[in-house]
Amino acid sequence: MNRKTIFSLAVIVIIAFVISSILSNAIFNPSKRRSATVPIVQPISSTFPDVKSDPNYKSVFNSQALDPTQLIQIGTSQNNTPFNASH
Image (cartoon, rainbow, N blue to C red):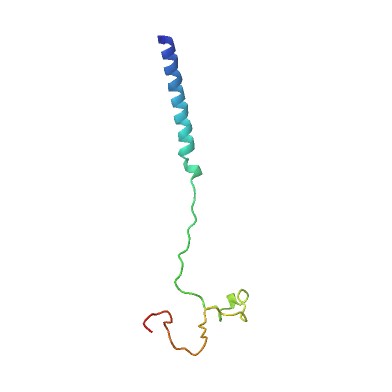
């Protein structure tokens, strides 16, 4: 390679470096005008509403529906631990 080829190659590399650094700063460093705003989420409450007496829930929940949280007893056994091997 002669001196002229090396000089032109160095100039091209420097110009490519300047252009790529300007473009990368424009893409990866957003300006203050384009800053993102994040919505604030309210914390979850540990108390549950009284669904049966609150009028806000009357239109949502069917009062005639089955309640799957109720204890269902089948038979007359009083054994509270049916899968315990000691009985």
